[in-house]
Image (tube, rainbow, N blue to C red; front, side, top):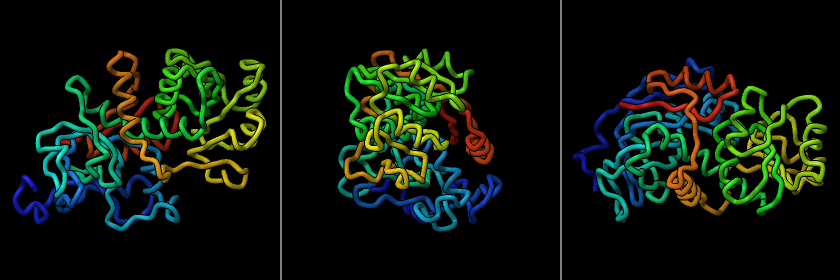
Length: 317
């Protein structure tokens, strides 16, 4: 039952696109307040996480695999307050503070999501940090599961200082996995703080990895999409030991690409795992930049420039 009468007829503010293009195509628009259907929850959004997927969808780079209908509101992770619930939803009530994933539509004052894609936000967890967690945590948890990295094994992570890498390193450390992470030299102290052994990416990477792990690496996770798959296959001893979330040429190398379309739903286990780390005082997710929703274009420009440590977040309201 909706907590707002005739909610679907009311207008609300969002930032959306009416065409593909550069960040400038992101503009303020008005959309209808979404009415939750069966199994859905409407959330009054407090903060939105910004991810590389956002600008890739906006630019049109993913039209074949991730098409949108214009006008489109982007954004795939939120933190906010339950404002209304649809039929058959018993777990959540208006007023509950939650965070989780959405299938687009997060750059707005209100967003819809499936009830089972949310978890309760602890009172001590800041809205901005909560909004930064869902995509990074789910991707990190899923990647470690698909790679089958066991305790005591060595994992090489390309692009380890970003939001996903930050969670991969912490989940791996909690599981007793040794991690070697590639990043710019400026991010090496940060990787060490997260329990990883940093190496500089670029020419000579294979030699640097072998020097760090003379016995070899057991698995490789590519978060960068920077043409490192052939090298990764060589270091791991086979394409079956390599996984990428960022290189769309994966199939041509015999490497598995994961986009989150596996039958297993990793959202809740990942968020519960992140909350367990937080409860133990072991969760570290720095916010690279926090901007208001009206500056979504600047947030995406920053994301596109790369070298982001942690996450970019937009605040709403």
